[in-house]
Amino acid sequence: MAANGFIELLRLAKRGNKHYANPDNEVNRWSGIAFEIMGQYFVAPLGEVSEVIYPPKCTPVPNTHAWVRGVANIRGRLLSVSDLTHYLVGQRSQSSGAQKVLCIQNDDQYVGLLVDQVLGIQHFNKKSFFSNQDAVNDLLNPYCRGYFQQHNQKWQVFLFSQLLHHPKYMNASIL
Image 1: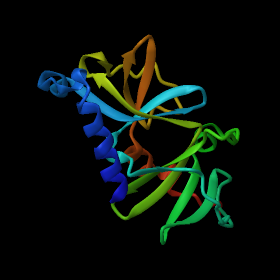
Image 2 (image 1 turned 30 degrees about the vertical axis):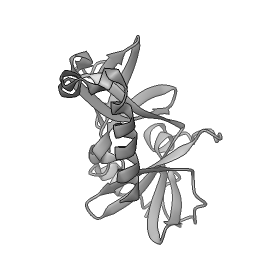
Image 3 (image 1 turned 90 degrees about the vertical axis):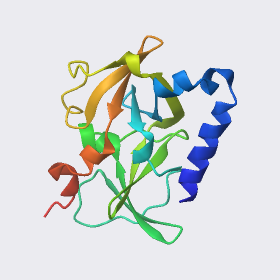
């Protein structure tokens, strides 16, 4: 997919930097797509995000929960778009020019998740990972698996694969 090629180009461009050229850094480094929702910072494994796009014009889907924004045609593919903040806390996210949609391809599912902003690819030292779940809000607990601590900031590891297998998310119908 073109998006995977773009992400790979970004990764190769970073390798030109002397800090990334060391093979030891590659072994101890974990990379992911960073994003923000509800004023909190998250990072998703690179392999779980296939593309990042601007919020598309969506066609509403009747008899679905309010967090389902609708469906959109993205280059001939039908993309189901959901507001991640609204799904998690029941409040619609505030519209802003920084909002993006993270496109997730998982098996036969192709979904888009609206987030407050995408912060690009972040790199973490694996030694800065903590598996302690006490630091995460109970609403996020089913989807987060630990966090990275970097520059006095916690970056929760959000697993979209967990979200796409959760019964609450998979049952978007209100009937």
